[in-house]
Figure 1 (cartoon, one colour):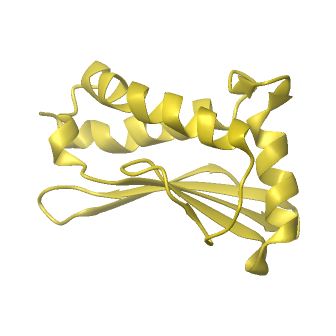
Figure 2 (cartoon, one colour; figure 1 turned 90 degrees about the vertical axis):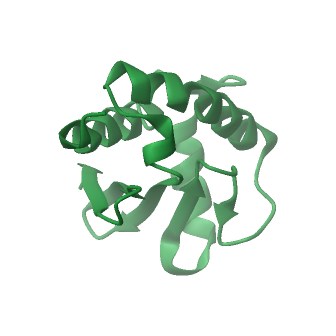
Length: 123
């Protein structure tokens, strides 16, 4: 297990999730996130990749849930590719929010030692 690889792994995972590689049912998920963020209080969404929950609670399109499910299944393999033991990060969160200059994407996790990791993907 390489704890020093966690931040790079989180960055790569988040960047991939909001990239044009994440295309489901004829739509880029980054566009779905932007549209949804305009509709929620605080213009912020949080995706928990441990359980697939999206906050704030609400009805979200099936294509978003389909994407999250795919990325949840891929995350352990992605961690292993970065020499990070999946059990070392029980939860990984991606926060997408609209800010004055555009969008901000942050990926965060707390490792099994209690250390918090937070990386900015877009800002």
